[in-house]
Amino acid sequence: MIVLKSAREIALMRRGGHILADVIDHLRETVKPGLSTLEIDEDVEAFINARGAQPAFKGYRGFPATVCVSINDEVVHGIPSAHRRVKEGDIVGLDLGCIVEGYYADCAVTLALGDIPPRVRELLDATRESLERAVGECVPGRRLSDVSHAVQSHVEARGFSVVRAFVGHGIGRALHEEPQVPNFGDPGRGPLLQPGMVLAIEPMVTMGSWEVKILDDGWTAVTRDGSLAAHFEHTIAVMEHGPEVLTRK
Ligand code: MG
Image (cartoon, rainbow, N blue to C red; front, side):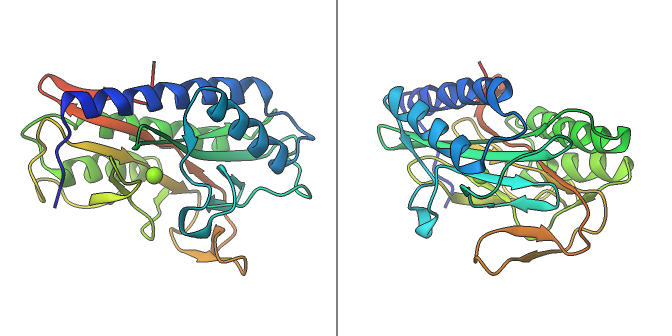
């Protein structure tokens, strides 16, 4: 069942979303070559706590950290470590959520550290653009798969692939609610979008094949072919007048 949110509930999610937007701005300034992924994680945890919110991922199904840090061929769910340092030329996926008064917000960004090849820049651009196109579909009267199709069509037209194994999701009093939001599919299918629906849309895009595998740590998803992957995510409320990106200020 898709739970519609009241204006009050959306306001709480907006508060959390704006905290996450501030975290992302902070990370753009602070994530530099040489930093360990654990240092990034501890910094974000302190930031979220200082704003009176709680990290959403820490302890979720046993995940040990506040941020998923996924580097290069890692698609999602990388575990921060004191022994892993980001370096010049890496693309670093940072996925994080927070809870405000019981309501969740969720977002992700992929940052490039220093110079990256033009085609890798295109990967990041295409992924971010596909998310923007998906946001544009979050209008009452559209159908859920219009969102999915917007991602897939944009990504594939640029010669990249959409990961199938992970999907976006409804969000609210739980981190993952119905409906699932795949990043692929034909348009015009699934539930009608209505005011009060809140979706976390999160395209995961690779330079090669869309197939992924999970590493022995039980969490980290990497591309099977070792190709680079990018991930962007926003939490979006469907409003009467159209989409509101709650994780953007
Ligand atoms: Mg998510």
